[in-house]
Image 1: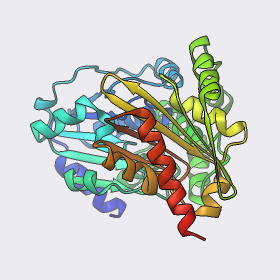
Image 2: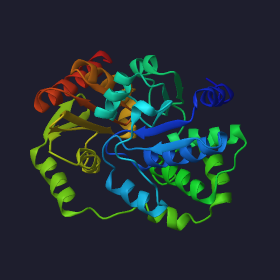
Image 3: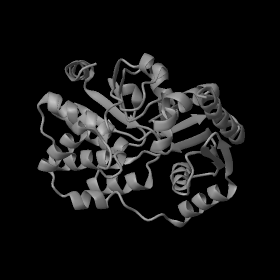
Length: 331
């Protein structure tokens, strides 16, 4: 779908009341793309009431950004009153947890804007499905919609878009030529780059440090072909633990944890692992694992996640087996 078709589709579905949401443990790209989109929708249709609502929790870094940008979040929106429900930066509807179930039950018109690998089930549920896996971030896609609509972002919105892009590009170290053109254009609107980058740095608190150390203490090391694959279990901060274990020398990491609603698995790999094996964590592992476990999964080539049911240890073993089978088939 091109940008003109996407924008026209949004205009048709906009209605008088809409809600924008995103995945649990929301990162800056999810939060900032929702915030920027809310401003764009208000510019497109005068008088529309836009609610930004997290499906569950924000990450620590997103919390401090929400405070800095003074983003108003509605924790319990009346979804049944919405004319449309927008979901940003979320590959699988299961990542919205209870809120996603309410959207399906109430049959609210669903609009997805995302840059993860295309998810066939989510696409089938959507009235409008705007996905560009080549984009560095969902914020980059939202900025494209601004340009297509002929709307210039405010300085505050430009700051939000830069925060989302910076987070998903590892402080502007990744991206396509188009990504860097987008960054340049946004910096013409808001040039406070030092403040933007400072908001993306934080110190781990004691609980996060403890979770990461426990993940290392409990890890299993699987030597498969020439790759070092690690699996481990920890009750919280799975994504942070996965990133930490990569820095210790793992090529691929699976970190699982149990919750009241089920299990959560975060997976991370090095860029080299993806280049050499062509194993896309979101499409090849997370989606397949989530489906097998009665849940959902999505993500990027080197970072993905699963929300599902079952036993964490068994799920981690299954994930390792899936990778092992793919590596074996390559030889």
